[in-house]
Structure formats: C-alpha cells, structure tokens
Length: 164
Image (tube, rainbow, N blue to C red; front, side, top):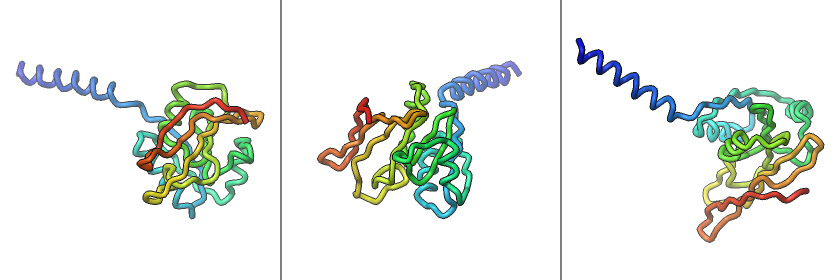
C-alpha cells in the first residue's frame, strides 16, 4: 500500500512538471472565407505551434477588416484577433509569440498580400522575401521583422524598426 502511495505521489509530481513545461495555449480567433485554402493551411501552422484556433467562416471579409480598423495597405486574405491585437495575413507563429511577450503599444501585425513561402503559402522551393509589419491605430506602420533568403533558400530573420 505504501509503495502504491509513493508511486501515485511521484506521478503527481511528474505531472506537475510536465504541465509547467508545456506552454499555455493562446486562443486566437481567425476570420476567413470558407473557400480559401491558404487560410486553412495558416490555421494548421498555428495549431502546430500550440495556438487554440477558433475558425470563423464569413463571406464578408471586408466587413471584418473594417470592424478591426485594418489599414488598407496592410490587407491580406484572413484576419485574426488575439489578446486585443489584430493579426493580418500569413504572419509566422513565432512573430505572434514575440508580440504577446513584448506587448508593444500597437494595433497588430500584418504580412500584406500573400508572399510565397510564408506559413500557409508554401510552394515547395519557391519563396519570396517578406516583411512582418506592425501597425498602430492611426494607420502608421513599421517593420516588426524582415525575412530574407540566404544562399540555401532558407529564411533569415531580422528585427526592424523602419517607419513607413
């Protein structure tokens, strides 16, 4: 009986370490057109990176973008909201985690348009360099991160602070 109690105690201690080591899942609400496949691939990217995705299908994405006051230059195909921030387009999960860690005084992040190679826009070896922009409520934007390609067609990330 005593051995069983010790075993149960050790399992509880081990379980507490495992739960502490696991990052907390962040809930992100993604608005997308039901016919958009790249949006679904981006959602898969988020889920693989421990986000709890609430997938909201809508045929009126312009209304969603208007409601979150997205600057028109920042537009892409899908719009997400997490902890009060807007995430527009194919923003890598690591940039969303950085945003949630640093908590800058901005409205959100965007990867405008749909660059090849971004999460959800993978096309084999075809990749475009791209910028993750940060934007504020007045529509001003600057570089949050810049992704360039090296000689092996791998992304190199640079944090930026250029104003636009």
